Length: 192
Image (cartoon, rainbow, N blue to C red; front, top):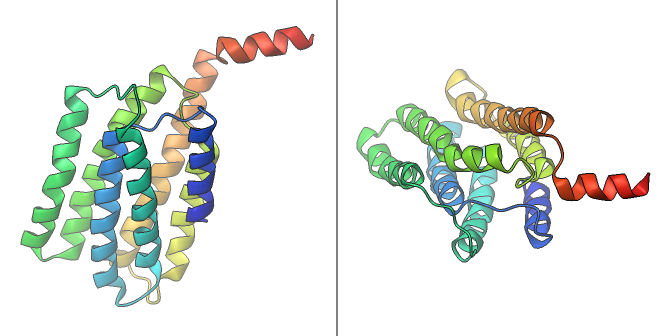
């Protein structure tokens, strides 16, 4: 499911519909990689951390692509978010507590969404909702890969599922508020 979401997103980039923000995707790569390590410790060899590792690899490739885009639209707050994501790794190593690390990562994951949310608020059609919806389902299915479910090892997959569905809902609302882009409206008016 994660790979399908990735394929949809890459296709939408190829078609010029999605415009990934380099700092969001690089931050998400870091968060997923560290989250996979923490989830692996809590799941004791279960398959849920594998989803995070695969997702991290996909996110890294999107971040590399975004780094070479012409219009990066990087603000100071985007830079602060990225620095915060980088700070998660030493914090995780210092805490030696996987649950505390996941709490830090969840906070940073929310902050990492900021550049994409900001961009999407002004350009509501610059992100592919199919990819985000599939990602939400992939994280939801990750819950079923946990061998011995408990509150501690369910926190991150439940959080990621909610975060992705929350972003999809946000984009749907913004699109309804702002309407369709002029290019799409023009095509539809010509069909009448």
